[in-house]
Amino acid sequence: MHEERAVDLANQELRSGGDLRRWLERSGSVDEGGAVELSFRLPEFLELRDAVRSVFEASIGGGPFPAAAVERLNEASARVPRVLRLEPPEATEAAVTSGAAPRVLAELARSAISLVGTERRERLRRCEACGRYFFASRSDRRWCSVACGNRIRVARHLTKRRAGELG
Image (tube, rainbow, N blue to C red; front, side, top):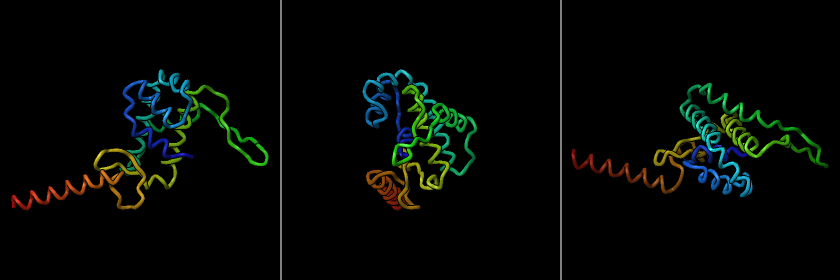
């Protein structure tokens, strides 16, 4: 499962159908025509994104998951059942035929569920500099990128320097 897709969704602002279309095209979720069609379903994607963010915040904070967010994730995941098929010589899991919107929403919901429903949730963080969600490579990591790490260190240095000038 690609848990990173849920993290990517949680980090998206998605202010318009155009934002959604561009994100879907970049993420490879659908082709250009499908992305245009899905851009009209922005409210559904925003609801799912808000549920993902709520569950992420609860996971990071160590609190209980909000019942409404859990229900939204489970509902989106259940929209598109999956079946195990034999594709010799391998078994593959495939979605039962559905429209593009339910399929993409279900994939995103499953991504979030597989993240917060496993020990990987312990690596999920929110960057102290920019507020984006990310996977920590170390237990003490507090920022998502080198740029944000530099921003935090510079701010800490300036705070200490100002405190020294005033004290």
